[in-house]
Picture 1 (tube, each protein chain N blue to C red):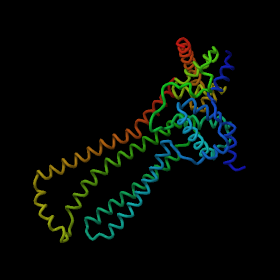
Picture 2 (picture 1 turned 90 degrees about the vertical axis):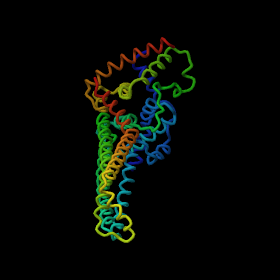
Picture 3 (picture 1 turned 60 degrees about the vertical axis):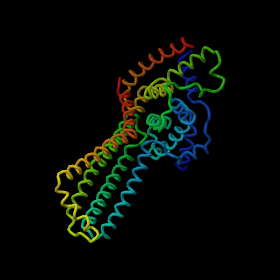
Picture 4 (picture 1 turned 180 degrees about the vertical axis):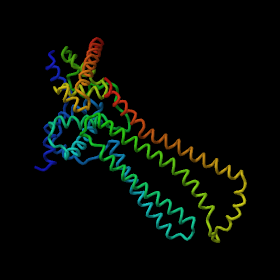
Length: 165
Length: 211
């Protein structure tokens, strides 16, 4: 199989990763589309050096997060908080306590720093602290410390959002 | 809600909608690049091409000229252009080596900051050094021109003026204003284009290193 075809098939299977990164790091559909394009381009460029030492999904996370965090936009359009407009229609207005909790958590994740968002995203994917450390370039102990801090931040913010709602 | 359920639901929300088709993905492989490093590389290639072109033009002009002043001036500019082109070539190689996105996040941030800082530093040094060098070199060469053709005879009466301290003072002040202007403009321009972005990346790196 041609490397290009092989890459497209792998990317197609794992495109949810790229969507996740784009949704978490970009606010507007136009920015998300730009970032998706950029991640596709950068990952294809880096694919020739992919030897399969890591899982493709881990490798793709690494490239996608690197691209998202260093993504340069001439005009800054990213607000502090991720809006609800990216959620599927109809979900945000339902008075469902579980949905409210999810929205609050989602909003709290959107308020984290870019680095903390990356760690949370990998944590949500059930990556071990060691694997998260390999993607972001810090030790598993550091990840554990950061994760504890992030969890307490998310807890506080989620409670605040729920109280204000 | 159980943690696993929360993870599942959040993952679903983050994945969002709008899956791309294989055709969409194929079309994205070679499309526009918008990272600062890509733009930087493109600009470096353009600058290297222009430096080589101008180097060749100035060699031609130096060969065509009969005056020592112009021969020397054009030759020096040609050499500067070629040295600049070589320096840019080395910088392009370094950018390509350091800008691999498959490294861990921390390594990528450190590499990107290193590339951009190196570029800004070299660019600034080049601009700020070249202006005074060209400025004073042009005076020196012009003053030492041994052959004065007919059409330059009218300028010969300028020489006595140069002994006047006021004229020297004027040239020195003029030089200082030009150099200061270029210095502040280059600093402002580079800060706007790169330094603000470098500072943003450094704060991300600091965040990553903090416990």
